[in-house]
Image (cartoon, one colour):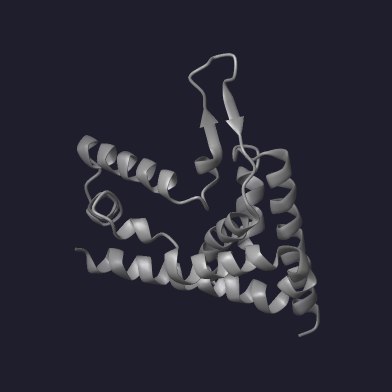
Length: 178
């Protein structure tokens, strides 16, 4: 086990929780009647379950070697790719989880709607890296650079964009009121 990877995991989970707590404190009151159950589920996920699979044997060693092993051999990269695949297939807060690749070529790829609790957790996951840097606005640049690549249903994309817009406006308001 790598102490550095364990530290990263703990820091990441802490920053995901910080993002959720900020949202709970600053924006959820505005739509808690509509999404009360989703917010409660997202809170549980961010507090207790977020990225728990990164501690499983299917992911832990491969992530540790890839990010902290100093060696990006073919085997290390392949092991990481399988670990990442396991991760996105076991963590519905990743947008990739909601892409259905059909065997029937006529049906092709279908992008399913994400439940709101996972949209919230996904944004907290993305935002955690801004919290790590101490630059809470970085999420908007990050999303803007990737939004054309990230595959979301129209319904999910609208909810993601709406939530990011609300966060942006609240951060701006808080900054102006300092």
